[in-house]
Image (cartoon, rainbow, N blue to C red; front, side):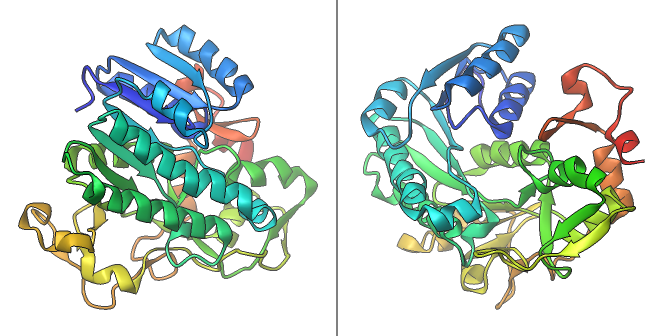
Length: 351
């Protein structure tokens, strides 16, 4: 589905972008990938890695807030993955207008550029915080989701279609809680905001697979949600730093006790598949279209997909099995096979 395609990736210098590029060229044969982002240092650093791999990747500097620049850079692109976003929850509470400009206005700019450039397919990355949001970041991602879900219906030439993928905390992403705990465990104290807190967990590989699945299955307007395990954050801390004291600090402004990816209000439009859920668009009664429902089954009335009532949980042994494939490098976890060694596993750093 990506063979011979020109792919445009916003916010492509983060953990997702690097993993997407690696998997796209390993599994498919794209014509090119354009990385569009605003951080020149991250582009420079990624360019060194791209040169070593000899991938046909082009770097374009720009901001999703700049609609004119987006349209120029998206010219002749076939596929768009929209990963650019401001994501830090406390920063959003303190700087709401900046998050609105990037996460909402930027999303609309991506949509309009894709329509003008006659792009085939667009997938936007969402967040579990977009479901029933209580913080500004979640609210901006919900607004972004609504824009992308409705964009296909606003497109009168029926060429460009838009969908969304929504998932929880990424195990190997830059700035996630696992490298944070690893980097502070030598202090002897691990801060936990609330001992009851639960979160969904997904690896970067699984997140990329969800995007690939979205491109393959999308009709336009769907939100794809993976079936992934939950874990208590306090259990995560005990697994990573069993000798440390756990300090309860209290929930931060805008922070949820549990994360939800499908709310009860979305249940009438949600289908369950073997490895994922799909929230189909209520607009235009698209959720009633039989072509969209093949292989899926409606979830029961009142269904809610939330981390504390998830049927799939990960324990310490399961977590260690996942982390055995990673090493801690700075502020992120990297797969051993990606950084060129296999005798320095993360598991040894935990012992």
